[in-house]
Image 1 (tube, rainbow, N blue to C red):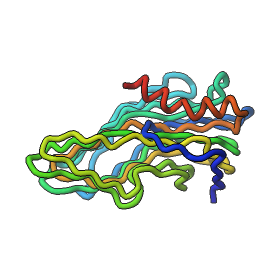
Image 2: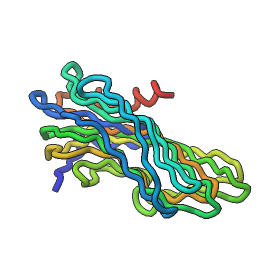
Image 3: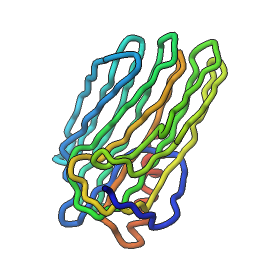
Length: 238
């Protein structure tokens, strides 16, 4: 069980996905990323090119393809940084349904590694829905569309029970949401992850930018920085 406590009121803004690491003596030790995709369309093929930038940082560019559907991503991982006492994962993801019927998608992007708790976490997600068909289109989710997890346990979710409609060939903003100063009592023993779960109508495309970040429980000045980091990174990517 993961212990959670909101140090301050949660602030919901739309944003990005990434994480920040843990203890000053033993921060998040990253060993790369893993990706998984399931869809109602059936099995597909995952291909990913992972480039190690430093001993603790990676850049990932890849995707999953099946019959008339695809999921593509550009993902970055920064393990423990002794200067900023933090680590994160962030990136962009695009999910496309070019079939003639609605399809379900479940995607998980995981940052593999360990971190000593307690931790303070922040994250954000934002995106848009494009209806590429000549009919009314929809993007929906039963439960959380986006979630942040530690060792397969969800610690925060956004866009719960999402429901968006778009006229033919219309682009709809999904908004921007974030959380900050979320205290996590447990250590990370395996991975921290970002998950997406949604249904796309025929001809639909959903794109997201997200971040999940962790840091050792810091003083007030560092807490202010942690809450600001995901928003800063999302602006840089735009």
